[in-house]
Image 1 (cartoon, rainbow, N blue to C red):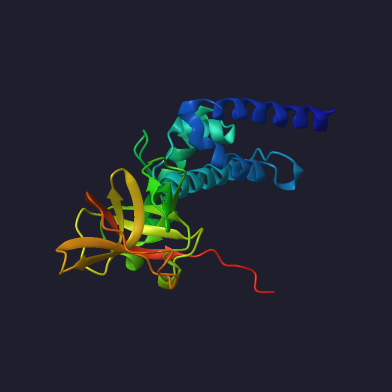
Image 2 (spheres, rainbow, N blue to C red; image 1 turned 90 degrees about the vertical axis):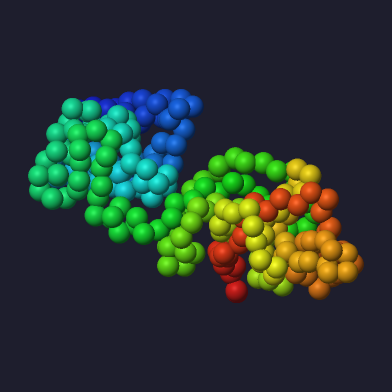
Amino acid sequence: MHRNNQIKGQEKFFENFETFCSKPIDKSKKMCYNIIRNKLFQGGAMSRTADSKKQIILDFINEYYGSYGETPTVRDIAAGTGIAVTSVHRYLSAMKENGELEYNGRRSVSTRRMEMEQVAHAMPVLGYVACGEGQEETEQVIEYIRMPESLIGKGEFFALIAKGESMVDAGIHPGDYVMIRKQNTAEIGDIVVALDQGVNNLKVLGFNHNKGAYFLRSCNEDKERYGDIYPEELQIQGVAVCVAHRLKKML
């Protein structure tokens, strides 16, 4: 009987949590749902010990920060873990006293894992960029990824997913994540995200001295299909600094 009541309680909690996550303002919490659900259901039952709740809170904070580059509020933590707001505050305060994290009583929470990750950049993935025919400019954050500063350097960054095959000879294939440093200038030979009359392109920036004009060049042997583009209104949005590939099965 006790076991049945426990299961019903778990189902009720997750039903309430999914309702909470369905609200537009809380859309970001959905990504944490399965992670926290797995933590809570370890061993087939929701753990009730103080130490396990502290660990669940730490896991939620770290996963949330890793996904969105910011710390969750106490209300976020309570909704995401099923632990009451007052209890969350009490556990955070206790963990602060034990040196497990930094907490100022409001939103500012810093765990050891977060401190290690702060040398990395959390950047938004703003959809796809054409490596072929241009694509109309859109800006919609579809996810966040983190890259170490030692790899991409300092600055403000965003990422795009490559679409098309015009840059394959530069090692950029369809589905690759291209990390872009946001800037409005570039050097000749840089791989740039360039906006021309509302259309985005990922290409190599070149300059034709005879014409006195900039052009965008593909990196593909099929020059007939992927010819140079001479933009009428060239606007540099950023310079590519790194590419992350999706590995394919070899057998």
